[in-house]
Image (tube, rainbow, N blue to C red):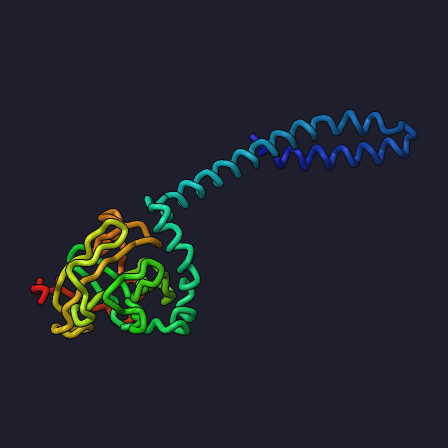
Length: 232
């Protein structure tokens, strides 16, 4: 059976020929109109198929988008922080504002972390919700960095009094430094927040099973969870 689009083209061509013949014979335009009617039907059929295909493709695309960009369950406070830090999706802006790469893409047994950009000027005994000292990026297969999380990092040497909390969450620690990037003797508390990439282990989990350093990291770095230390 001929495709509707092909039938439409043939009908249209036949209509043109009939129109030219009618003009020569002085038969007016009625014959041309009557010959075009099947074209309208065929065209509508072809258009209907085209629309159906478009809608099916659009629906598949929307479904794929939902799978690759799932809705994140963030509180209004976290959403505000995410919006306020969105400029750092551009890592050059982060560097200009004092965040510097620690190079290694950290891999953990229960999920990877990514590449940490540290701003030493923002480290202190009290966490500032709007100014996390660490931004975390995931390298893509094309080498580009995608902002995925932030981290508040508080060394015991700052004089912090007891375990910090933020957003109703206790910081993890105190713990030793993350060798080899952070010296073992740099005892600290930290709190991650996955506000740009969904984490099925939880928004405040230390690692994300859906982060993959192997895709594009030049310096993947396997680490083990640091040992716990007393708060002295």
